[in-house]
Length: 364
Image 1 (cartoon, one colour):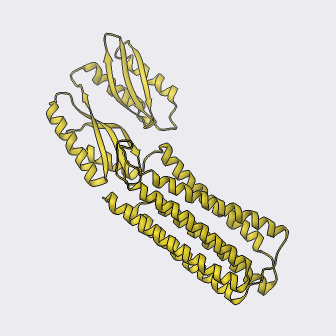
Image 2 (cartoon, one colour):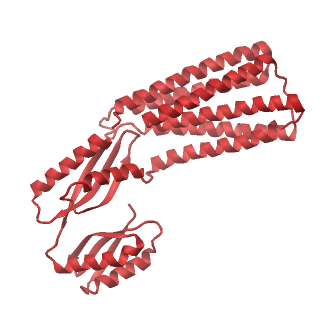
Image 3 (cartoon, one colour):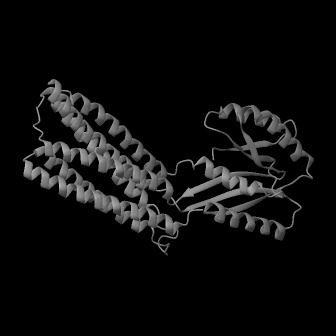
């Protein structure tokens, strides 16, 4: 289990190192650009300085994400980190759009840059430093499970790609006289924009509430089903309040004749295991399984057989004799023919009781 405090500290240290490198690289390029009279190096220096500005925003956001929960924010401040990742994604997109526009201009009206030795050396060092930063961010981001640091890795990688294009195209033009920088820049720009879109989509999905990571989903379910008292589970919901803050709830089915005290003890144990093993705050809702009503047993059996081919499952089945209604939930994936499934289930239920049928379709 990754301790929240250590994870945030690791992400912060990583981003601060990147901030220092961006500032140092920007100042070095600015000095070389001014001394050599190279407009391209001076422009690249301001690009690094703007990267440093973005780094300041991300450092602040990650620092804010580490704040403890309070009365106004009972689930903590972890989503600040997603905001930081969004800012980085937007910065990568801006770089891609700028490179695309520049590449199109150069393809239409080729320009022959004049690069001296100092400029080549500066660009080479820049590529080396940015490549190190991309690798550093990637390794540290995986270790800290940080979306922001992962986005910073993509940002550094895009800088490596752009600077490499400038350097390689300059060498090719010097050797062959061919103007290829515009066309290559367009290709690199499109690649960078795709990376930016992926970052932004990932962040937006998290903020909107995307389906949880399958490994985490399976881990929570495995803890609950590992208890022999649990007959089955359903309706597992995992809410994401930051990379280190996950709150989950699940319905666990217990025998109806099991005592309330015993059920409560098992649920408590599950919740402790989920917190210690996965860092997930779990809440377990206990469902009783009635087995002394032969009609319910028959309905469950018939429905389960009927929907098995649809990769669906039924739960919370109940018979309301007063209202003459059978109610149940059916879990399906996104491809199941819902109306056909409902009609089939209703037909199976009416083989046992001639009641109305209320079906809730569950996609979670």
